[in-house]
Amino acid sequence: MIVADTPRLAHIAREVWKPLLLLFLWDVVVTVAYYVLPFRAPGLPLTLFGSALALFLGFRSNSAYQRWWEGRGLWGQMINASRSLARAAKAYLSHPEAEPIRREIIFRQIAYVHALRCQLRRQPMDENVERYLPDGPAQKSLRRTNVANGVIEGMGLRVEQARAHGWIDTIQQASLERVMVDISNAQGGMERLKNTPLPNQYRFFPMLFTHLFCILLPIGLVETLGYATPFGSTVAGLMFLAVLAVGDDLVDPFANSVHDLPLCAMCRTIEIDLLQALGEPAPEPLEPDRRNILW
Image (cartoon, rainbow, N blue to C red; front, side, top):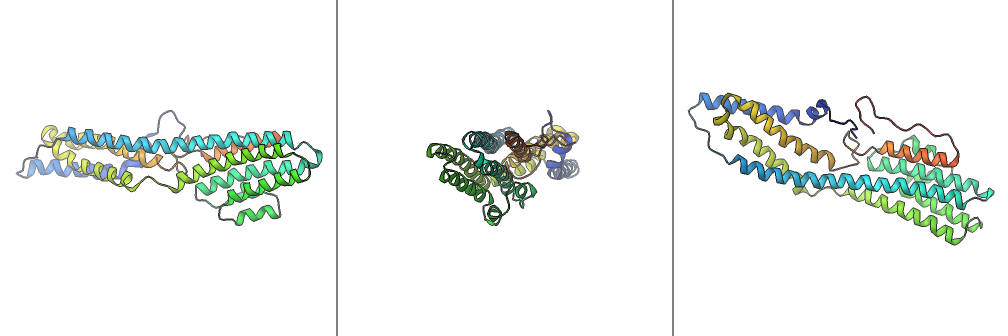
């Protein structure tokens, strides 16, 4: 996620420079043809076309932003639920013999959020997942299709084991289970966003109409702007191409691009909070890189 107050020109140029260059070349061709060839540019209702296209692109951008913001809200729930789980585990599993299970539950939650991050970004499991999973049966979770679900499933088995030993009662077990249900619900919402893209109509028609408008733009402006048509048409086209790119950038909040949610930073926040709850040394929070991007 770009955390600078204003986007850098390099980021904007990287998004739209190819279609913008083609648009400029087309503008030049139309302008030269207008003065060299004996033809008259047809009058086009560009204001009507532009207004309709702006409404269409605005609706699409709002839909994409709602997906991005819903993803951020679900990760906010995950952070809160992780803290609640660590707090409940410390309070309920206070018996000295329950210390290993308490530590394993909290370590599993750290491994869980890292595994979920990797799954959502379609990346292989990294060292953060394996580091917090205990050796033995817990490593079987790494061979599951849904690694994160396997990790939290093992967490529930540890809670049941604690109840069987008499270290917690059924009410405390139900309390821990409710927190894990909240965690699973948040994961389900994230997977829904990841696995359900915007309908094809939302993606295809805005792109088609925007490019068509950019093609017609210099034809309708050349008689008014004359030799300034390439400049004026390119600037006007840039506005529509930029809005189109914004929708593409926000539609998948877990795509591991510079515009997506900073999952690494949020996982590090959970890791710090849970390790400090155990009294363990914790790493430093992640900071934006030199390009003001927080991953």
